[in-house]
Amino acid sequence: MLSKEQKTKIVGDNKTNPADTGSPEVQIALLSERITVMTGHMAVHKKDFTSRVGLMGLVGQRKRLLSYLRREDPSRYEQLIQKLKLRK
Image (cartoon, rainbow, N blue to C red; front, side):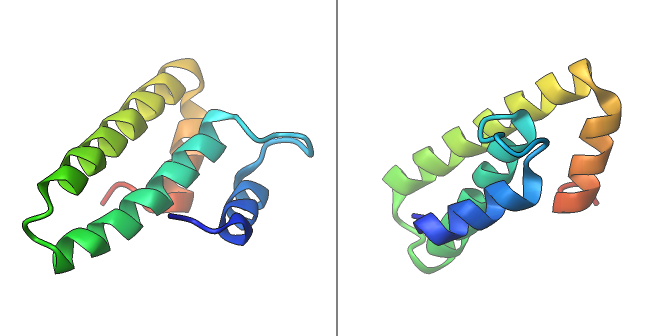
């Protein structure tokens, strides 16, 4: 899990306006950090199938949010994937 300080930093780095906490950019950034943490957990605990299901759910949710952002505003989508280094 992410600590409150980590979440605050991620929201601060990705918000689109001063009161923003729920834009697609913020949600995708938070999900990406959780996916990174869970991937590390899965490297150590290879047989933790319950966590694997949760990880796949997070990946799917991030994929849906990225699809929405690409459909609604392609320029914001491009900026976000470059900032978060999601595509190779």
